[in-house]
Image 1 (tube, each protein chain N blue to C red):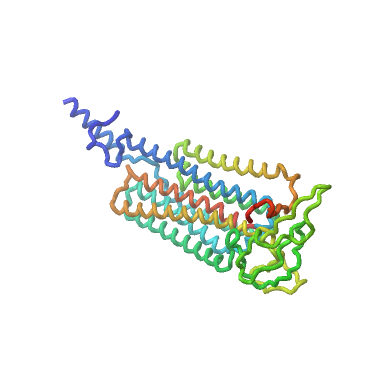
Image 2: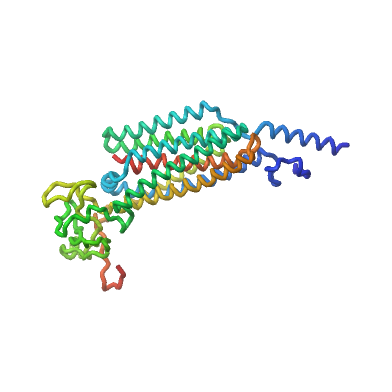
Length: 131
Length: 294
């Protein structure tokens, strides 16, 4: 008798879960709104290349790209409605990429004073090197 | 509590999970960890780009003119639209809207084909004009310049081989004659060996006819082939990812047609969507960095 009751309760509980679904459903207007925003930002990026701002052009382009990336990540990839752990993982990835780029660039300028510009020694034949 | 009666459990719930929610959360976490590795994979190429552009901006300024901004822009819009249809497809899967799901997944697939088609057009154009990577970088207008070229301006010490073979067979830095300037650099007593000549040489801008000596043209910087190396590595790897994503989406279409997805189980569509969005994310950065260099 008790086993039968247990079985009914368990089935009911699982049925509850099946009916409720496991994830948050994103509203359609949010998806369409983000899409329009992404198109607008793409247009902005292209338009910005016709305005000469010197070295700032690169940073503006990257900045707009970052905004687009965050829109895609937060809404299309659902990070805004997910557990914070997923967003943290994503931010960690970005952090490590920035670390990678930053350290490499920093290192690449470190020995600049010892470099001779445009100089790469030719390998001579006496050294037995193969061209 | 582990359930001993397997017929009570939904078919898609694996035995090592207690509830669907737990399985869904685990699957999603695993996918996010994988996406981190994808981001870092492309991160390596972005670092190569950043390094080279920081130290040789003239190469990027010169070479990006070979790229078509309009096609790149269309590709960006295509991928963003495909991201919309993909995210919407995930929503449709959650709500059990089977027909809409199949339509949206098919639209995403179509957008993928459009992206690859435009990429194929771009690549074909570059192949035809010899704008490839490394030693294969032989822009076609080199054929019409004659053997006696004036020295390129503003390059210290480096001297390019004057003879260009008519059949363009061996155009590479190590095959050319050693430089005919004086033995090497003389730096306060130390004699350095002569420099290896670069693959460059005075070239015309694309579309221009060859000039007589003395006419003002923009000299091609050295090592332009490295830009195309970076370009093909990044867009090529990205295109491979697009193809992989399209295969996954196609599998989703087949599964959706069988009616496998609903409110309790839409995980494969969700994870495929996440992958597709990462592919879109990478293109969002590739587009300004490669095509919109000012």
